[in-house]
Amino acid sequence: MPLARIDLRKGENANYRREVSRVVYEAMVSIGAPANDRFQVIAEHDAENFVYDPNYLGIARSDDLVIIQITWNEGRTTEQKKQLFKSIAKELAKAVGIRIEDVFVTRVDVKRENWSFGNGIAQYAT
Image (cartoon, rainbow, N blue to C red; front, top):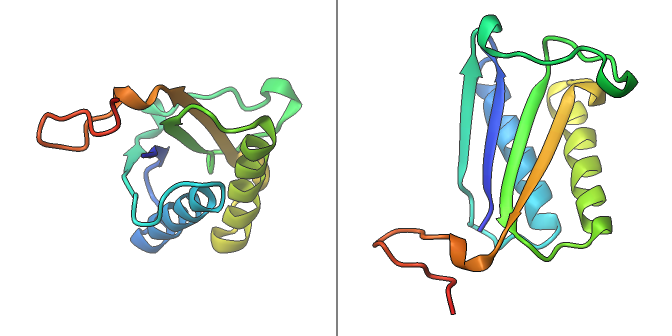
């Protein structure tokens, strides 16, 4: 049920992108995403199309910034969300050497009936 959009500046190799994808997926599964429910879009951007504030909220960001947006069914607790954010940042640091300051994650919670996984059917609508 989650859809992850992962945005970063151009220049990273395929292995880097695969590892970022893996880490995000595993973190989602760790707080309840179904196994094999893996839908992700990874987009690379030229510098002029990847705009961010390098110091917002006192966090020093670099051009290695990765922006991750996860759209998911509502219902996760605040603690689960905190766990997700921490897990993604920590595991990306280990997997690809990114600084945790360069991991920006947002979640968009939606109602279950807002999904169609194909065939023009709202599979989760009741």
